[in-house]
Length: 127
Image 1 (cartoon, rainbow, N blue to C red):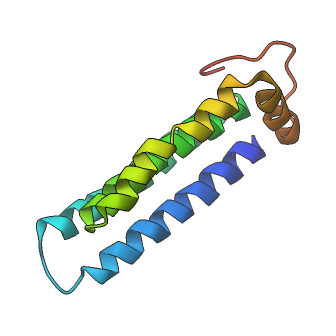
Image 2: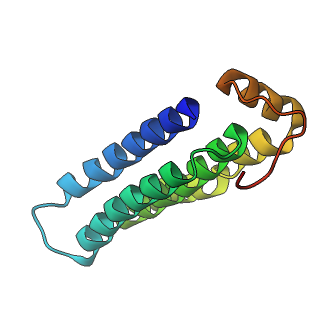
């Protein structure tokens, strides 16, 4: 689905940009923080590949899982860069949006309608 592809690309780029900013800030020194940030970049690319493989998933579920997965990578990157407050805020608030997108039937139908997904009964998981 094109919608899911766009979601995966946009969220992955945002994640890589955020992690990349922290990586370039620490590039002068070789430390465990830099290595963790490089691992976060690798994780973001791996998550992108995984989400592309399952792009035929229901759009609302796809958005929720992609957002939550990449949000976790950003939270780890923030903690690795030393911004523990932002990492905690991301870790605590990140599940709210995916939970709302999938948990609220009206929002779920709206996301699916915007994506052009036609199904009488919403499916959870892979198709």
